[in-house]
Image 1: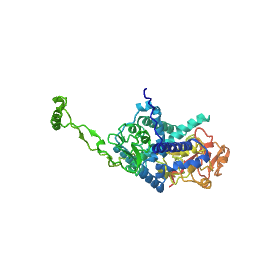
Image 2: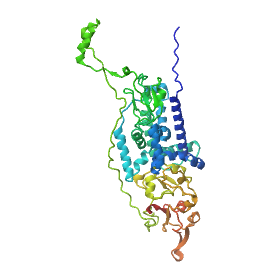
Image 3: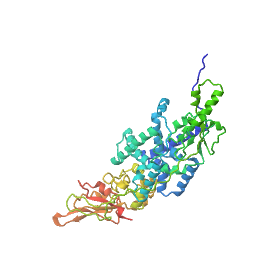
Length: 529
């Protein structure tokens, strides 16, 4: 009777429990962050926006030293669990990495392989990002912060898709931001499908910072060489490419603590532990054949004396195997490369608040107007330095007056939210953007504080004003009145702004029917300290 072979069934171990727990936490965090960008429910947003306030780079920009110290301690103890469980971009990479490997045959065709750490590149890039941020250019931080990059994908791609599915009118805040989000999504999908977490271990600034703290964590993955049979299953399942089976070492600085290797090992040779395994059987040490001509005659003579049937020629060609000592705890070290010359971009010349130069030709716009930043900022400079352009305030703005900037604040600060009074105006009693900002670029305001917060000042171009008076009833501060201009039969009514009352909400500019150029525009308060 032939023997019936049953397929191998992996037992449910602690390692599998840790892996499935990590997956559940990661998917939960991913769903929460995504819902904050896609859902417009105020109650849900205010209840769950804590998920954005535990992201590492927003915490750094908000100056939350205590929270950063907690993350540093967690990384020193457990390794890079932020990358595998909390970061939404990390979960998105895992999803795209899994798609081409859904079946066993597909996983065999798309096996992960051990790769050498690109330490020089990733630490040089980290230094470049930090250097440009220090000198005032947040372009690289905006583009490569993992949380902000995913926020743009969620707000510019997932949110419109949800509107299409829900049968709503599709609104795209900025086509430039949509293009950047689409390029980011395609790049992340391609890199993850190709080599798993390669982005985390090359260009991600947060991953590079955490790699410095996770080189020698208290809890780490260790390979028991007495049990390991060199089947390479762990290496082929490691999306970070940090397991080297030939030396039985795991690079903890690149490991994202996903527990996939533990689940893949059928021999329980990998453990998540605080100790280091010591060989109990030295003969299990890896042997590498090395030719030693001087020992060949001796081995040939011993073969002849033993009465072997091999010919003398084959005996002479015999090679003596020499044991090679393995440094199982080798860690690559490299010095940080000094910051390269930071990208600098000449700031546009801006006029002072209220000094827009008036053209006297009919239909000509005011010049020198500054862009209007969202409410709650301490100053324009502080706002531009703290904001990462994640788009959470843009996605949650009820009036949709916010959009990602293009060149309003300069090319070094693209994608930072700016008021677009051509599309809408800032609701007088709305504080949603200040409530959800994770970096404190926008300080939280009460409704009473919002009523007096100065966004800018409205300026009237009398040559374009048609005297309709639509702006007067729409001003929530009653800061606009109509006055006569000229004398006699040639007089007409024009709007006049009381600058003591105006806060620059943009309601007047939005309702102004003058075409093609608005007769009243808001000059941003960026000239203020």
